[in-house]
Length: 47
Image (tube, rainbow, N blue to C red; front, side, top):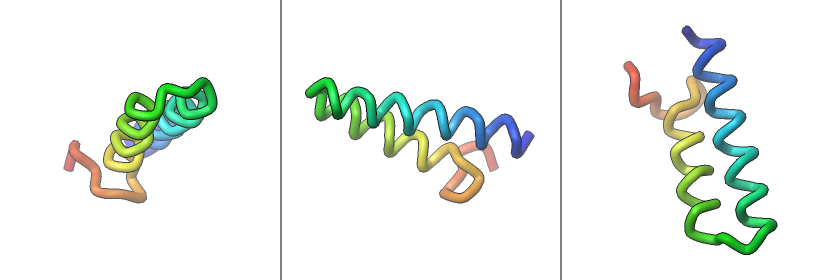
């Protein structure tokens, strides 16, 4: 389960970074924050 959360968090953060580069500031910030919350290193919403 932890591996799945790491992968999901990484995908969300990378997607957020790409959104920021494209100029979609709000969507990029939301994706990065959600990615940090989901990841096992952050405050996981699943535990």
